[in-house]
Amino acid sequence: MDDYLSEKEQWEWVKTQVRENAPAVLLAIVLAVAAVFGWRWWQGRQDARDLEAGGRYMHMVQSLERGDSTQTLLLLGELERDYPGSPYTDQARLLAARMYVDEAQLDHAAAALAAVAEHSKDRELAQVARLRLARVQIAQSKPDSALATLGTAADAGAFAARYHEVRGDAYYAKGDKAAALTEYHGAQTAGAEGTDTTLLQLKIADLDNGTPPTAPIAASSATAAHGTAAAANTATAAGTAPAASK
Image (tube, rainbow, N blue to C red; front, side):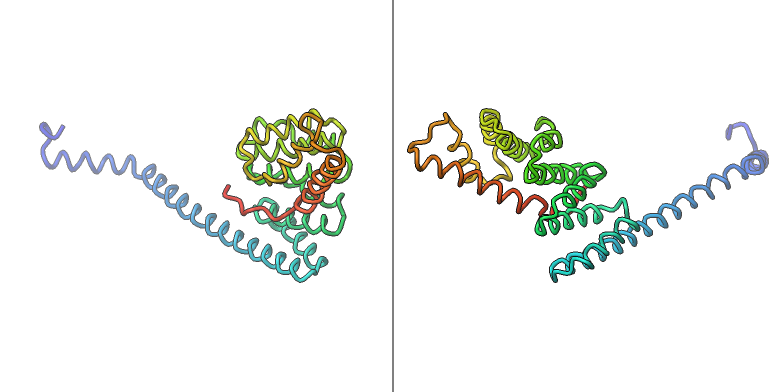
């Protein structure tokens, strides 16, 4: 077009285009600017909320360290009310579950863990909560509930070894020692990552072939291995999880 129009004609063409398209161009610019500032405002608000939630969570940790369970639960309630979708709220529920286990309030611990397992947006944190919930359910003499909570270890990813071991504990609690042994071996095959390998070996030695080396030692080994496992699992059922990355 430039080859066929004079400078005056080109200028007239430009002015015509501006008159005709200016409203649309201006609207596009306004929308783009609004989107940028809107995103920055929202991001700033989210950052501020994360800082506030993190501050309340740290206060909750400090309250628990002081042994102030009343203040701990008050802060948990504030997090659940004001920051329901925050990962700090999930962490706070895990922390509360630990407190409930220490106080032998297993029903409350199970409820706190179930909330994380069912609603957390962080997949790994939800898996940790399921593991701890299953351990609490075993301590409640609910091995079938524990197995239902765990499901299969197929989709457990990095938690596969721990899922196998806790499933083994649930089967042992049911009296199904063959299934328990299969799960314990599954934990070994999965690499035993995140498990107490010495304790896992004790559990396997107790059950493997059903014939420990010496009868008196066998009986005490069985009791010690699984008694220790139950105590350890209950004590760690609701320990504090690493912060979400997710």
